[in-house]
Length: 95
Image (cartoon, rainbow, N blue to C red):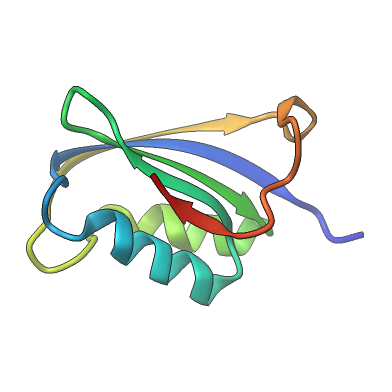
């Protein structure tokens, strides 16, 4: 079985109302990464990225750029224990 990792990312800056979640979903799907992107009440976007270490790393680096209208000021990344997930996400969703 291929190694799998999960990372939770909190993205700050101008990341709501600029197609950040949809762009993240598109990029994640192109990389074969599953998980989700959702807006938080404090203006940040939370991203759960699940997949191979290389693909997840590429997505985490991309989060610093996002779509053209975004202005990212911080990305906090934390590893998530794969066994702590109730189930492995089958696709990448936005909420």
